[in-house]
Length: 156
Image (cartoon, rainbow, N blue to C red; front, side):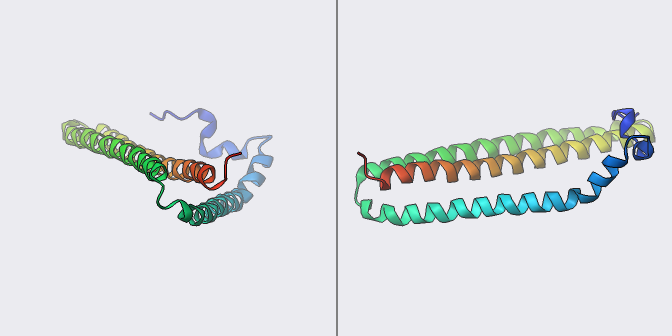
């Protein structure tokens, strides 16, 4: 039995009052592509800005305070990656246990349901991992940029 609301059915576009939805769906792929391009440009701009800041840090190369703080940033990143690895391994272990239970289905409909559920959970695990990696990447760029700007800009 579907867990989707009735209005999500295949015939929902043909209902009265839905032509605007049909028209907006036609441009959705273009809008998503444009948004992805904008976000990629923003990320590239941030990376370029951080590169310039890194070049400015060269004059503070011998400063032990800068090295100490930089190592703290690296340790925080490694801690987050380690936690993500633990989450990945735990998720895979849970999925392996669930997959082993599929053989206990006593009807084809139960087997199909269990397999669909397994693939949904697998997709969710992959999505969560990818999202966490992109969040980490964005946090690294923002945090590093903030830190590097403080070190490059002379305090007043």
